[in-house]
Length: 275
Image 1: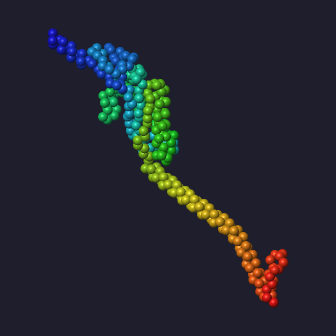
Image 2 (image 1 turned 120 degrees about the horizontal axis):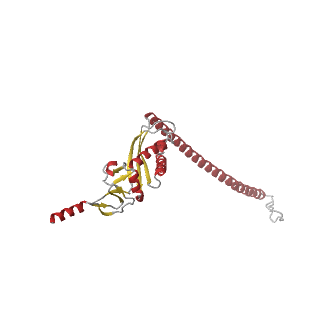
Image 3 (image 1 turned 45 degrees about the horizontal axis):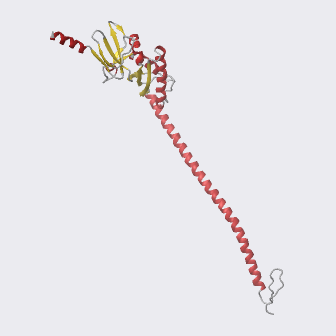
């Protein structure tokens, strides 16, 4: 009796499945997949099974791509990282639709966990196509400065492609252009162009500095000219006053000599000097 109870307990415990937070479960009973996603919790799976599938953000790399640019040049290497999420309520339907496309996270990335990922190969194929299409819209010689724009274009195209077959099932959260290598000859041309651009910027800076110095000297010269003009006007008035004073002084001196009478304006002379 105890043996039977122990065996039953062992079977019961062995048939328990736990769904962690951030994941959902997809139940199967006698080969039939449940249409409802199971929320996090503990489930008894003696007569059926439950697969735990993540709803968290999943990332995976896409390596060794060789797309062509807008100017018809083939890139030597392009690597991107794709980040996406799966809508929890749509996971059972995706599980059925992509029955052969169910992997564990550890099968996708190094050091991944044992939680399931559904539709991975569907997203991977679409990501490759989106990358090739996106890169074809950019010139190879300027592509190294446009990584954010390329990533945004890949994300837009990938989201549109996934929505075309599974509307609302997948959300592309981010794209990272991690490695972008053009042909060595193009790399040399890019370096030459960067050097030329830097030389142009340096020359423009020199012109701006020279222009600013010229403006400063011009303003300084104008200020000095204005000051000289004001000073000249002031000095002219004072010189004239001084000259008049000197003339009056000389007149008085001459008038003060013997035999001369001092006359001031229209006043009748009142002083007569010696005979």
